[in-house]
Length: 363
Image 1 (cartoon, helix red, strand yellow):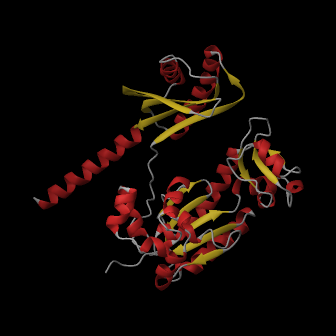
Image 2: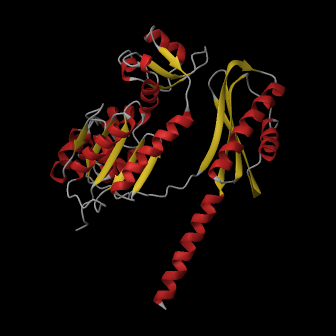
Image 3: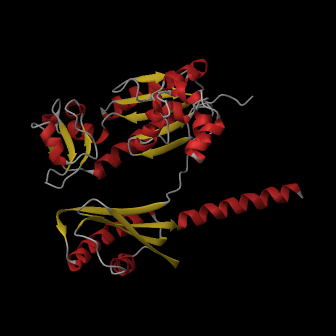
């Protein structure tokens, strides 16, 4: 039998908003939203005080203010968020090198074998949360179980400032009781389709055969069949390779003039160049994202034969993509992203190197 793993998913509580409340005592205990307060602004994060009024991330600022008239908007400060995120990761590495960051405010840890020699993953999670609180003044929640999927779901059970352990003998019951919307790959459309098929929770999902699920959900069907039975072998990957890098801007007013669009694209290209330099990467595929005033979205891409990272070259190709065809409507958002990065090339070389070493040993 495969050895049971001990996986922890640590998730900071309302991270961006909590950092703002930490740095500004006047905001503590008040409903806070990180993001723009303009007519076209969007909420990036909301404090728990704001969430009580139904304010959520990705919500328009207008709707957020309507839900919570006393809502306080603050601008995001990613340099500060990254600084605190680095402090939190230092704590993770005290226990294990198998740390897979998902974002600035959450990560998976494999503590099956850990640097402290502790047998209890539950105890490790508690110690980590206590250290985070002591070092940063912020609260974290955690989920502990035998695989990444269950650990992530469990971290949400006792939020904020709590943790939940799903022991090996509790896994199947936990999954049977789980709302179908909590399963990976089940978005709004898939959930509605499952409801029509009489699937509302894990128990309903488990009652279906693999053939039935594959027939109705294609390749995802096999995933659903396995994950509801606790089969999820994805390992904690300490070196997650970036697949793309980009930036986008939502405008205060819709833009119809392509000349104004070029101005905006120049600013976006400059931001991407800064990010590329900071990450020391370059890419071959440039994608232009256009969101129109009616919220329809379009992407246009071009792949070249060499890696680029300069704003001039990025802008040149973005301009070419902009003029590729006539605009369908006025534009509310523009974005540029680079993919097919040189990090993927490095990964391929490492894989090839590993295969060669294995072949040498075989011979």
